[in-house]
Image 1 (cartoon, rainbow, N blue to C red):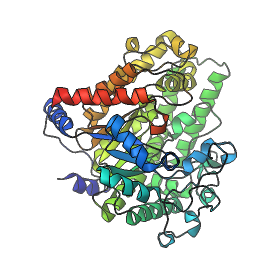
Image 2 (tube, rainbow, N blue to C red):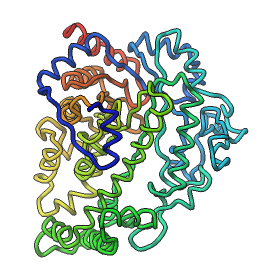
Image 3 (cartoon, rainbow, N blue to C red):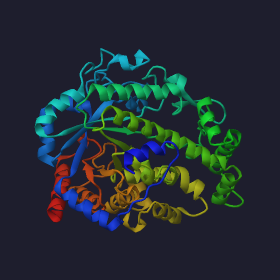
Image 4 (spheres, helix red, strand yellow):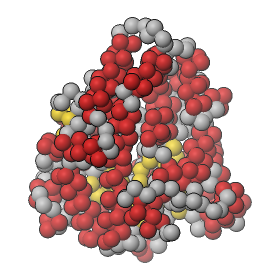
Length: 492
């Protein structure tokens, strides 16, 4: 059974596929293929390309790092949710930027307001994908589009207010519900327009950077979602009891708040957490329902894109949370992704991993879930459970003293985990992140070289150069390129 047919049947409930090839043989073959022709891409912001000049920047990408694929945003409403008062991005001079970077065709949209571009924003009316393709084609470079899900209701996209999640208390949340029919229609319209209007498009990536309801309920203001009519219908199909799930989420919130307020759990924090899960097992099933609903968006996109243009390589942003969140790993595992993926972009941002994982540990594990143990024991255990050797990573004290990057072994272990679990059903492209703004890690070329080398040793099929091209120091781009060249020489 081929992967396309498997995908179609998987939507009907069929799961699992056998792989006859042993992993060592498979990895050896991958290394040989990688040495001959390797995917080397870079993500870049559209405004950066417009400001610097598309042709000159493509020349720079090729000369410095041998880039053969360029990926940029077609829609970037997501950035509004990280800005004060949800205002749009601006130029250095304070001029507002558009959030839609391609020309749209209103015939694909049931709600014409979804195509609106403020004519007063910079670059409105231009099409970054068309202009990029015109410059990339003569250079033999491929063009990918990308979108990050704008899941927070900011007013940037008309009508999202009516698609809000409903929490366990019956109140509207700030996030959009995956299962709302209008939300599904929105993405169907965007994808239809994007792929049909850009027949030259080589690839597309979609990302979702929001975690499930379980941890969001753990002693915080937020409470488990979603209990709207559309999610309740899906829950009924799975024979889930929404009232039991509601009670469980409320108990989890109560439990986390009690610990944060100084209350001691008689049987210990972790045992008490397990007690809640055993007494309210629908919480776990609801968490999986939420994650499956999130994934169903990607499955629909894959099928829709392939129905329009089978040549478009469809991939997903495997966000950085996958590398530090144990519960995300349990509910969103690599070995289920192959049937609806051509490729996976695995974020291994080794420079920001220190601060990010420290924050996640401190919020959810240090005092709450692993609060029965002193942090000198629980933090190494946390890293060990993630598959990272605590002896090879900076200590908690070092992370607290200053931003400290993770070692290249972190990149190796996470890439190897992805490669082993995907089992060749999709391409794995590592995305080592370095030189990220806001982090004072002072990453040096040798660290970049080692991270790239370790990703390749793990058996990845290709690489993305950095988190964003505009962030990178030239010395570190050169180190990235040297690592790739040395790898190719070694395995030619």
